Image 1 (tube, rainbow, N blue to C red):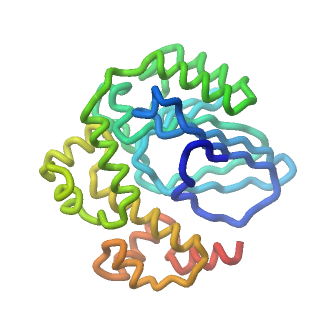
Image 2: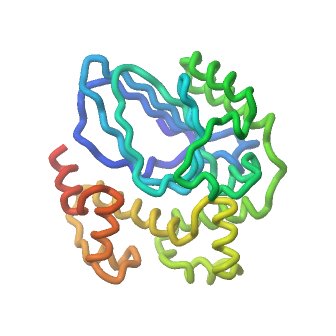
Image 3: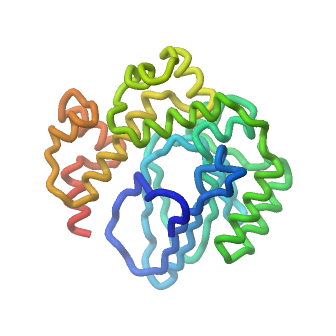
Length: 268
């Protein structure tokens, strides 16, 4: 279920196994649209089946992940994210917009890169109460309302730079012609140094990383479509100088070469 949000990107395919799995993605109310990209809810019941491996490629977003007894705020993770689901459980998440978490954190978002912290460090002791009421709530829409009320009560003042950086990241995500830093700086009146500083402050990682990750998301979408892929042509379209560098980056991030990943999908 995707209410008011686009399709999920960067989700790696694995062979399906028996079990009940629920995944919802819900847009925030308008008052929070400048800081929250969407909410996500995952529930699973695998008591009659084996554990499931779930993997996603990284996004340039901070997440608040609420689960019983273990809620954390996760900064940008530069490698793929892997987790194993087993038994029965559920997680509620807030995916903040690029730039949207800076006002809550009140320090450069790069301080959270490849790190996680307890939500109490940002939101105070009331974060534990939020965790408890979300864990007790079985309805997706009610969970979203509770989390939205919690964040709205703590909403930082508007920040024009945060909104501008978010717009740049949105363009990188959707415009396939943006492949280099020069493509960004030619569109927005920013020097490379200013762009780097703003991304470290508001996004948590540099613009080159963001460009590379979104182009890799695009590669994954092409492979997942199931059509035959000309790897050299795809590499050039994504801004690589040759096929070898594309395959190297794909393997490092996904865990296997693109042709092997494509065969895995057909086998599944």
